[in-house]
Image (cartoon, rainbow over all chains, first blue to last red; front, side, top):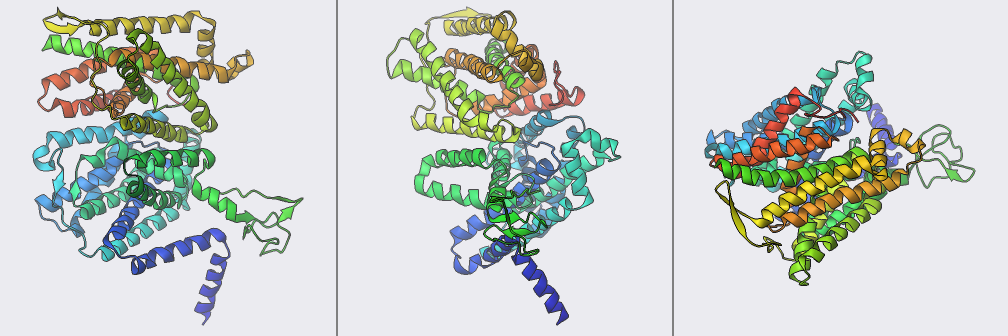
Length: 353
Length: 286
């Protein structure tokens, strides 16, 4: 009884904060979607959304939070996809073993790719990391007898035959990824990541071992990107050099900036909006879809520079000027201290962290 | 083989040097990484082709017209898209990439892919045992003239000094009464103009395709980083180093065509690990 009361109170508290209510509705609707829409096409789109949301979140961790500009993020995704596909096709490892192996390879790649970050900063680091997947795709071409070269590796086995089961697996892993990133960013480690992003010299002067934390950021990012890459290989069943391409490296950056860099849910929101949008545009407009897509993207980035998620939350959520409790913006009085939400007719702008 | 590498490498080196000089100028003054830069180069090549072939205008008139069109286009994007968000480096990068992709899409909608443009001057000659067209020599001459012109503009004229002042210290330059917005517009026009000239002279020598700006963008990035961001001398020297490396890889290795970016990039990473600011770089942090 007491337990029920405790959780009831927690739930009541959660749904009176607008952004948390939205999150709750979002999670429930994504759990229920396959019940109503279970045609293969929709499920395929949903699974890709989950995988890409993991990929975008992993970029956001290293570049959004830790501030290490990575422009070649497809490196981690590609390494994991290639390693799990090769283990699966050449050595007949089951997906349950090959995905963790690919992820491990991506973590190691993260450590290697993080090494330049110890010496380079900003755009220099960005372009060095941009070069890495290009070099790797060169290696893939050279060893084409085991990597399949231009054609890629075909015939990778599926993780699960049922698409609905696959959807729930990816949704669960995405939820765990997002939760882990939430916990990391709210911990001391996350604080240090942001300190390194804001001013590395000051962080060093405060006694932070920046070498350790930078490499940690890269390997954690490699971990989540690697999970996404392994799942991708065992879902699409073909791994070619396109997973290491220039364009694919920029996708997580586009999604994250659209949703909101350095927010936990931003990249997920970005992927969940942009991936279906481009899919629909392709179905309606065909060839001209990317034109419309980039124009939409441009308008959003210009008018909501912090990302759509921050923009939207600022519209529906206002902080009480007295006690700083988050309230629905339509409320006239604060739900906590009952003081008026408007001072001199002007609503306080909410500053989101 | 050696002569082939020399002849092809020299041409590519000239084109990279022109593009890198413009890109480096834009970076050191406007402090933005404009990924659409090589897209302007591609648009200029197509614009020249479109004006000469479909409208039948004489090439000598078409060349300045296409350069002017591309400069106006870049100024339009600079003021409408880039200026409102120039505080955030990440947004500038994404939006300039989006501009490049939009331009690529618009060009490919005209169904002009894999176009061969007729030469401005006809005829060929033997040079180190390799048959080269006069257009090739015209291209080399134009590149040298434009680079010297750019250097004279930056070192001798009033506006050139203003540009260099802004790139060295924008606050003090502002206090001396230099209008920063005007200088940034001027730099955009000059650097995109240089890229547009590169596009016009190269269009008869390359097989044009709307996606060619992507591969050049990658090489251009390697050139400016390798040479040191913001150093024009470094960019020009490394442009030739990279062009010769790339051409040797393409001509000497069996699968060279696929490997050329990979080798250049590996080379760049190796150099950056030894000297983090590039060969001639001064701007380590920004």
